[in-house]
Length: 94
Image 1 (cartoon, rainbow, N blue to C red):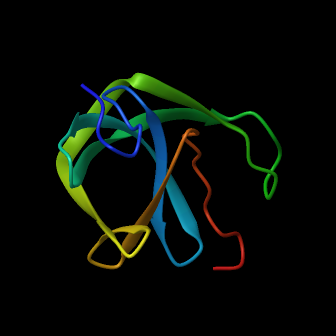
Image 2: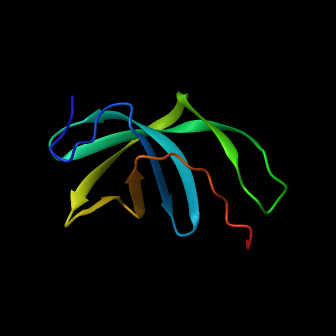
Image 3: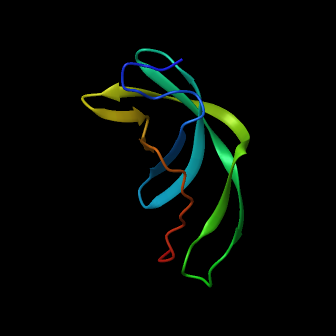
């Protein structure tokens, strides 16, 4: 199934709050919502603070998070999300 925004189950996604980002995969869609689950990441393939983590889209875990499109921005509480890539990033300044 695909929703009116062209998002479908299995689409990679990156969600986050502030400067950290977490990889996820879309697990369900409706005409107005998208539900994701965070996915596992492997070891960093670069030397800190460089970041290149292997992302396992086939290994979701944790509780699902549902996002709604509010004026063109997909939000769930303070989280925002982007679709098409799944990226893990930890801000090295903290």
